[in-house]
Image 1 (tube, helix red, strand yellow):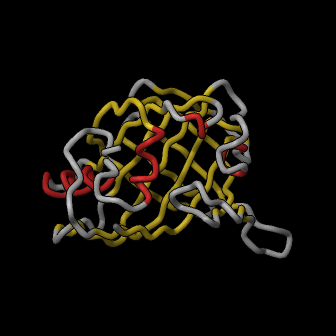
Image 2: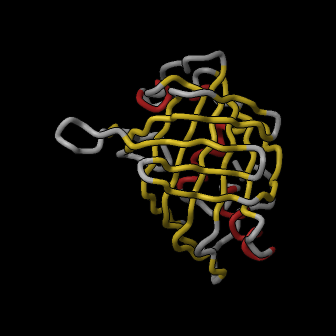
Image 3: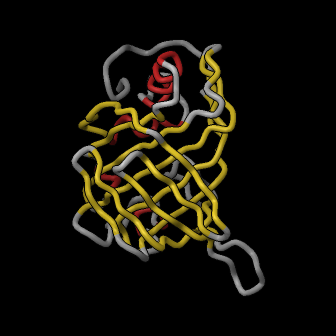
Length: 211
């Protein structure tokens, strides 16, 4: 299967590194992720946004360092069944060349982790461009996408001060170890998907992809 839109498989080399933040509509901790997509979401559907802050990256010679993007997913309660709706937001500060390069990677046509999502997606609703920011204020970390998305999270720690983590996650593009965060506030309304509230699921991690 090709990517979310049919441009044919292309031969390019690419790499992304940075940090990702995920907010979904499940009550913490998301059963979709902790079960490797076998257990149902805590609601009728799993709605999620995955925000990526690229500290470095290159797509066949196009430098995408400093770019930001967000993947939107609306799936049935059991994510492994597929039939996902997905959309991509790229920061409005990215150049046209950077948008094209990031879009090519995230389409799945260039291999790597995004390609594994392709068979699950039945409806790609397109690419939008909005300002995307990642801010830190004490223990609060906030992701904002234009006027459409804002969620604030805090990392969970054990009584010994160690980060709380999920391990053995083999179906998540930012796995196999995911840091657990707590959502204190969330408001998401983008590409026909809406959810929000407090106490929802969040993971955040450094990630490294290549294709």
